[in-house]
Amino acid sequence: MEQAQIKMQDLDCICYTKGPGMGAPLQSVAVVARTLSLLYKKPLVGVNHCVGHIEMGRQITGASNPIVLYVSGGNTQVIAYSQQRYRIFGETLDIAVGNCLDRFARVIGLSNDPSPGYNIELMARNGGKGGHRPLRLVSLPYATKGMDVNLSGILTAAETLTQDPRFRANPTEEELCDNSLDIFTPADLCYSLQETVFAMLVEITERAMAHVGSKEVLIVGGVGCECEVSRYPPIDDGII
Image (cartoon, rainbow, N blue to C red; front, side):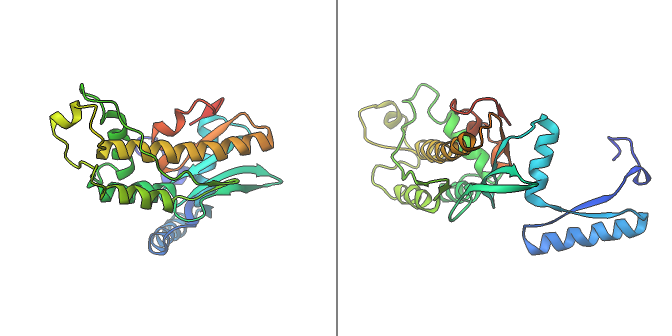
């Protein structure tokens, strides 16, 4: 509020996340919001967490009628607006993409700073550089079912590969420079997991675009911050 140079009296209302989400944080925020509402005599407005992500994205980008790819630690959905409400065209059938990436990051010992998914992206982007061999794309399950995706299977497969005899958690310089060796590294698995998961998300997003005739894509949620998901060329007029 100091940066915006406004005071509490300038606000029209007090908004807070009503859900969905984890119970304890939601309850804490609701108590603070109600306290501020009563203290400053401002209307209290509960906001849907998912819709908040989407509407902030629309406000910032100016998108009129986009297909929304909502990807975060707890949500993976393809959404479009129809008949006065948001409709889910496709979603994960098990775990969310952010949860998938975070869990794999813990398996291979990546840091939580600033976030596990971001560190997977950095390793996938930079792990094969430095004069060594190119990153290897390891085969992982590709599970799209119509407009939906399965992510638990690809996570299990990636975790299992860390126990494979060909896996090198800490490869030597000689191993990295020898292209004849049949090995793969944590960087290879990060690259393979990210490429496969994001390709699945792009596929179901494209199907939704074709269904509604939209040429705009709005990517929201924490995983949407990872620029690799916006790199895929099949999406035209993408709005991130």
